[in-house]
Amino acid sequence: MSQTTTHTAGGHSAEARFDAIVIGAGFGGIYTVHKLRNELGLRVRCFEKGDGVGGTWHWNRYPGAMSDTESLVYRYSFDRELAQEVAWNRRYIPQRDILGYLQTVVDRYDLGKDIQLNTAVEAAVYNEEANLWTVTTDGGESFTARYLLTALGPLSAANFPDIKGRDTFRGRLVHTGSWPDDLSIEGKRVGLIGTGSTGTQFVCAASKVAEHLTVFQRTPQYNVPSGNAPVSPEYLAEYRANYDEIWRQVRLSRVACGFEESDVPAMSVSEEERRRVFQENWDKGNGFRFMFGTFSDIATDPAANEAAAEFIRSKIKEIVRDPETARKLSPTDPYAKRPICNEDYYESFNRDNVTLVSIKENPIREITPTGVITEDGVEHPLDVLVFATGFDAVDGSYKRMDIRGRGGVSMNEHWSDGPTSYLGLAVTGFPNMFMVLGPNSVFSNLPPAIETQVEWLTELIGAAEATGRRSVEAVKAAEETWTVTCQQSADFTLFPKVDSWIFGANIPGKKNRAMFYFGGLRSYREKLDAVVTGGYEGFTM
Image (cartoon, rainbow, N blue to C red):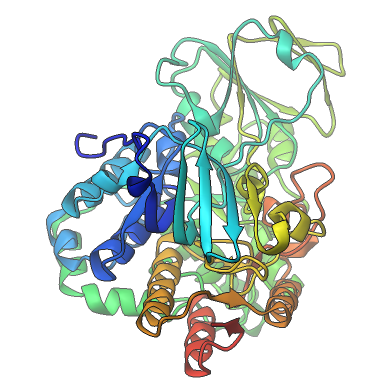
């Protein structure tokens, strides 16, 4: 990561003052630095706690890590020339290649000189008289800026369940969200707790190299094939030739995953036709495609949802040879979590070196120095214990910092009843602080959502700069109305019917509430346009 260097303030107060401070150097932070510095001409400093850029893709280096949105739209769209130059050879991008792509963008736009690595922000306090944010780092440095932009990522605060004996384990105990470079699982006895999108990716990779893999499953998942395969030169040429139209379709779609979403209700066709459509999309692959590209109402109509769920359960019975393992792998809840896909997840359980333990039926009693004991008294001997137990999503990273707005009120106080925002971008009482993918942002493929938000915020800040406005702040009533809108958009779907990190249900004691806007990217962009047309309605400037 040659051009991304670590900076220090060197004790010079003149160097410590900026126009804008950005926290986080993932997809969101990188693009924010580019837009604010290279297009608005602001003096910007970005702080990143890792020793390299990439955010999620810097930390999540576990075996099997890759995007499960297709390569052609899991990237920035703003640089069409880069799209002509950068090639990829498979339908999905592995972690190391995503990281390399983001580093290419940093180098291409010379962003590294304004990104300070190995620096965690501990506090950010707003000075009302000066209209300045003061940011303090873990190194004891202080910096000020008119604007504070947080690009913390919705999945960055790791969740470690409190299991008896966890600290006694003498092998390697790791969370997938901070995988160490020196850890190899090849030839080892590996235990995995958690089978969400990360856990299922890990199963596919680990089952092929571990001496034995024991999967401790709490909730079975609806997995569909990813359809991952090499892409041809013709495929890439077609993408480049139709670049503008592809990205136009993405922005005008609901989940922004690069395929045409269905407008046909599932129950409007015969059972035979439904199975044909499900099979066709099963063969094509991709979780979002299966949920949103087959029929228009899989996520909203219980009968349509059950039809899709039953199709996937029938595939589990076909694929998994052991009937008891197939039963444990078969979900009974609605098909209403973030849709996931893998190349060969269910096939992995046909391997002799893979054991499935349903911890709803046979809970973990405790972790021992040498493994895991379940309630049936069996000890599962392990060399490595992997927690794929997710994150305190969306607001977790904010809660780990001391952010204080008007009157010294902390973000944790403001969010004591749950995280809220206006448009996923701003919070009342915190002037000139803007969030990329804050609470109640749009539920969609993230890079197009990030570009939408960063471009809109750049225009907002540009308008404030051009007119000499000292502060921009979300109005309380607008924040409250948006919170209700997001809850209503969730309630229109089946997503609230199951426990999911999307609603904070994976964290004990966390209030279950909508943390995304489920109306789709097109609807969200229309709302942002309407806010501008209304003179930045919902903001005081």
